[in-house]
Image 1 (tube, rainbow, N blue to C red):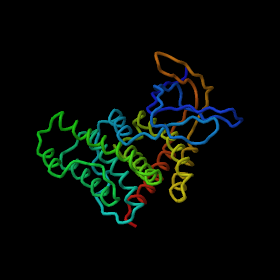
Image 2 (image 1 turned 120 degrees about the vertical axis):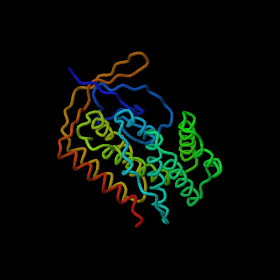
Image 3 (image 1 turned 135 degrees about the vertical axis):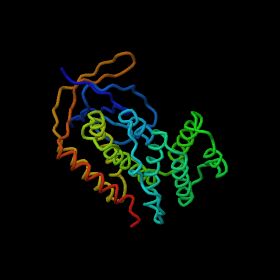
Image 4 (image 1 turned 90 degrees about the vertical axis):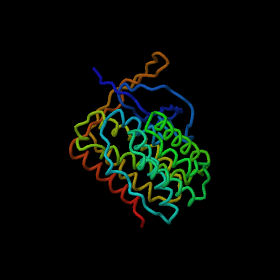
Length: 288
């Protein structure tokens, strides 16, 4: 019997008549098909996964582990070069999503909100974010459902503004930053990540997101980030994978995919991939 998994990503099918071999997906993954926020790319017979937002990534993590590790957040740093400002705007987006989804303290939440506002000012972006006075009022508020809802609302407004106002080149750097930071958080969210089968499976599923991120970066002039992500893709290629014929079933307005490629880690491939993520992340958050 083939194993079943839950698919956490928005799945978009783009099929063309071509001899190229189709991409595969994880066994019996389930998703609702939607057509919003599709990244349009020229391709042949591919299966696309939209790049999930940091909040979508960290919301799923909060269902896979209850452990919060404050030591993995990027320390608040001043970045004076635009590429690093863009990358770390993305990094801080993931850090803030991590704080919000794990319902952390007022001070941490406000510090990262302030860092994002400062970076948005340096980048010349006007997101109409809340005033410092309103932020102070939130800090003084009693911890309640309204408090957490307020932070989630703030985060959602900020992310939606970024998507609508930042040009594609700048947004690509932000995506690189927030996706690598989310991967870093996955690998370091708890001491026993390797023993958490659901979390390992989710990390493995990220290979589909990586493929799409590589396609986006391949269209940009700066190949440095593409080459870094390509190293990570090669580490995915070293996983132990088995292929089953792909079958598609429609059930209750859902699409169920049976078969595809099922991959697993060994301790060695896990450590190797973690090391690559760590190195990329270190290069992103460095002030050099």
